[in-house]
Length: 181
Image (cartoon, rainbow, N blue to C red; front, side, top):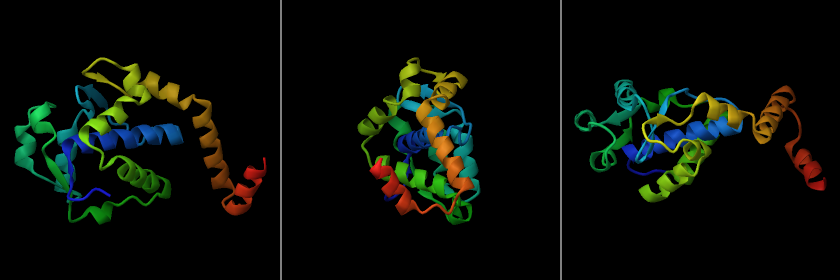
């Protein structure tokens, strides 16, 4: 769990990792946001607009003055901003179990990494390896198609559909059966 808010660097990288892992696990984009690669990794193209809207709704508490002072993604000012959970965040909480599980997993696994460690994780993902140029979108249609066409992703999708169709399958028996194979 992240304590005391999250800085802009971590916010944008955790958001990218959630989007990437959602695509990798479920075969579709979650937000469809445009992630652009800068020196410090992918950032949502309209991150300021997004943060201001979340602040307006009371989901996050954002220091607007600091946000306006940041002219772009530069080493100094970009990673110093802290973002806190806002007063109305609970009203907008995720209710879909798989979304919540993935979000919690991303936060628990990557939320407290140092800037350098998080950057290393993000840059090891396929979209960033395939798009080495700065100022370019990283989750292009071609990259998304490549990820979705992966047999593992397709297998996960089939399993997900099967579980929706047959939700009463005894998970313990299923695990025993798979273990016996």
